[in-house]
Image (cartoon, rainbow, N blue to C red):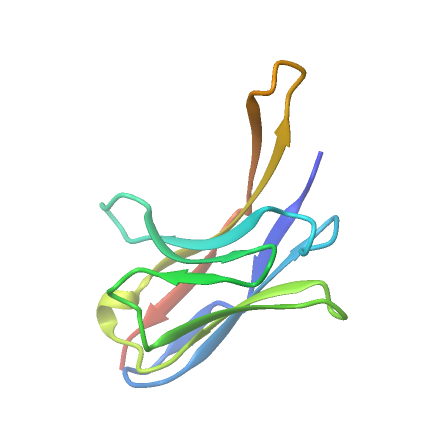
Length: 124
């Protein structure tokens, strides 16, 4: 069973910056994609950013230009660098990893792994 774990959450003032980390029990470069999601109180979990095995990135428009997703091979860590934080960024942030394989009948088989989440609170 693959294990992923987030860290780095905490309290930050509006306009401040914070970097979240996600480690995994296997190489972060072995997954087809790794993503960051968040879930605010009373809201659904929402997609924030994704990075492919080749390093291509995708962002939700709400964080484009403020958040940066990246991976470090030496530290085997996925990062989410967050800047210009707003109170509405307050949420539990989750790391997600996906593996995809071709099955015996040439179907795509996916395995999804989630961390337990790390709380980010943006408040003065």
